[in-house]
Amino acid sequence: PRPAEGCHSTEHPEAAMADEFDWQGTLQLAVDTGSCYAALAFDTEGTFYGSYPLDAEGNYKHNVWGGEYAYETNVTQEDGSEAAATVDEVENLIKLISGRKGDVPAGVGIRIDQVKYLHIKSMKSEKFSVTPPGAEEEQEITIDDTHVLRAGSKGALVMVRGGYMFICLHDASDPKQQVPGASEAICGVSYWCSGADPE
Image 1 (cartoon, rainbow, N blue to C red):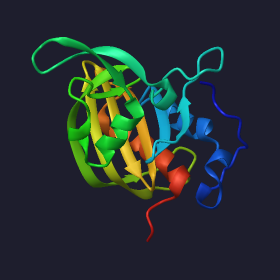
Image 2 (cartoon, rainbow, N blue to C red):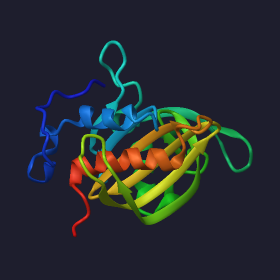
Image 3 (cartoon, rainbow, N blue to C red):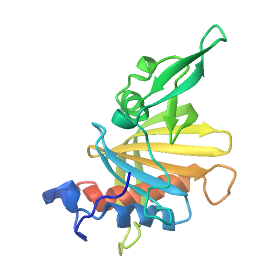
């Protein structure tokens, strides 16, 4: 899939349609912090808004595969045998963020960009004080839900705020790409999407 063309918006998109918002530029802000190597955005129903970075041809380097892009893979079942399974990464992430992780098919697990992650922990209503990239002063940002995932040295944060689901991919072996910094990078994206917490 290729990114959609959209007009640049420097204001919070509260009154704008999602396709008018500069998703690529905003997700790039998170990656440019050095706290993660990729950032993706969806709404909590699974509508895809963007992914950064892009490859040399302008295609997304990282995706969450679902719907018509669901794929088949072999998974290990509870008895240790292998069986083919259809993986809809988007649908399974929606199950995770809606508290239905137990509904994810056994052996399939939570996958992002065809990598299976272990769910480490979930946190509710985390409050951050951050100065988002491009903002002039510190802002209060409360993330509704945070899910920490791990696959070897690959880390993923799935963060939900204001009807959006943000995914941050980071290298857990890199001291600059640890969970706190990656969380703050996504808070910056969230700020430009939904504004700061109400006072």
